[in-house]
Amino acid sequence: MRPLRQRMHAVTVFILRISGDVRSFPKLGLPVAMAILLMTATTGIQSQINSGYIIGLNLSTMSLKASGINIQTKTFTAVHFGRIFEIPLTHSFALLPGLLFSAKGLNYKIDSAEFSISPIYIEIPAIAVLSFGTQLIKISLFAGTYLACGVGGTRESGGELKRLRFGSGENKDMKLFDIGFNFGAGIIINGLMISGQYELGLANLSPAAATYSEMKNKVIGISLAAFFSSK
Image (cartoon, rainbow, N blue to C red; front, side):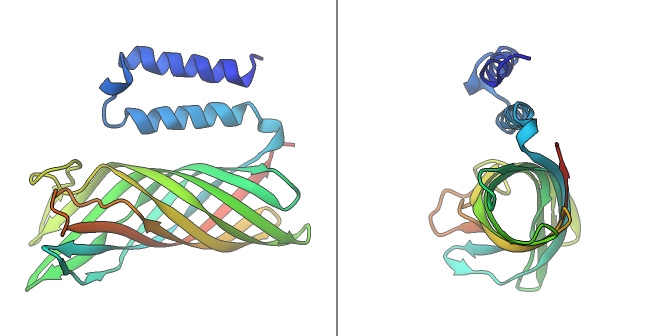
């Protein structure tokens, strides 16, 4: 088997060849490339990691401003699911990267008109985990960051449902990329983890150029994850 560095280099060269140039990546090229590199990297250290699957609920909303005025929003319920990898660094400390599909959104009202926005993201979390307890039951505290790219979703206005438009400018609904922090806690019982986490988006997703407009994700997540040892 070729060394990890050689395999990652080969994947990178392949991505560049099919795209022609990094600057000509389509909108989904960057997250897809990151996902391929993540999976390639984890393949090279399978003997040291545990992999698993995660599924859960998102209780999502946004901090929303228009023309400098705060707009009251309501919680939007959606789901997240994907693949995660536990990379132990010490007996009690590990890294937890992953690749998720995560639906978020919000409901809000202006005067008597009701609106909703529900974006779907490919999300790459990078989390540090501190665990303590017995072999059977452990408590975990975690914190980290995430990068997300919008891949779909809908918007509703006055009962009319339309496809969400990502980008910048007056004819768009929200920006394509999001980044933020997440933190939380969980309990691990014999390889099964139940956790609660909070995501705080740092990126202003408002497509408008004006500084008095703001859209930032805020998500409370409840997750169930199952890990499978590679040993």
